Image (cartoon, rainbow, N blue to C red):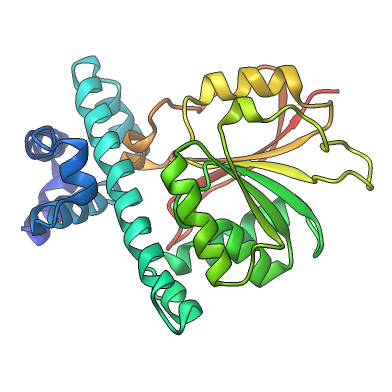
Length: 285
């Protein structure tokens, strides 16, 4: 079926909508518990189909016209819910595999999207102008804080992750302990309201050099409204979004326009295997 979909989708926007609606009809039946803890192969197939659809090479204008359909907003919200929860499931399962392994680093590197993180983190490391020994904050670190692990492993950057789900935050702490990274990577159980701007500054001696915001950290508008109040002028921020083609449907609340009070410094488009556009911002001075 994948081969059939790829040919037809290039020719017919109507067929794209048909496939999206078909996916939605299967996904909407699934409860949060079924997505997070279910063992059915169906969920894996739905995730693969979604991954295939959002990565189709189609014109942005075609995707935009589809995603602007008001009647499809509940569909996109449900698809986004499924992908977010299934991603948590994948990360949780891999985190638990690391905890019981005698070769935790080897298991970590077998994570299906490990290569994506290597390239994405390098983009952020260079875009934020970081150096070994710097510390960053990351909002939305999840049960398997791969971004933070790769930042230290590849670039020597220390970090603090902020994760709002208590269970996921505690699991990530255990993973860091297993990898012997607890001294250089800290985890806070909280959300964007846990950030008060302390330690962020433009001067070279600032304790925290930048704040990064995960693609799944939501709601973006509320997050940036809070950051506008608490972050000092000149603070550097990077934000991951899904911007190209049908990947836009994976944004819970789209952030395509520049947030008020922040200057956009750069916007780096994704290159395979990375899915995310990275937007680099600085709070206005």
